[in-house]
Image (cartoon, rainbow, N blue to C red; front, top):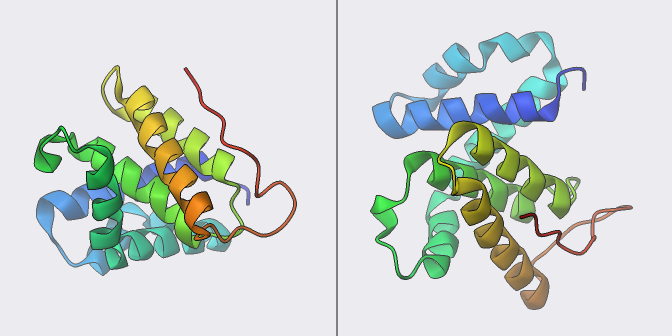
Length: 155
């Protein structure tokens, strides 16, 4: 993929943010925000797939997040943090070819760039916890070399 996946994930974040605020039809948002990726079919396909999977599974993703933020009112979490967590958990659960370490590191870096000063640590903690639970419950379906690495915690 010529375009770095981080740039694609940033477009996904923008699209999901636009959807969260506007509730415009997702195809309209994809055709507006992610349209420039069409020149790179693999990048566009990944972005579209991630956007649609996050929206398809949002209730499940939010429930996993809620379990880790019991002392916070879910709706008080920063919208950007919620979306980044949804994306990261979605990748952990439904994108078998992406190593968990990559999904978590990408989420941390995006949080560092787009959210608050403490968001990267918050995102890291929640995603590490979800990953640990997915491993323990046997729900982590990663295949291939390098896909079952142990989690890396960044400080």
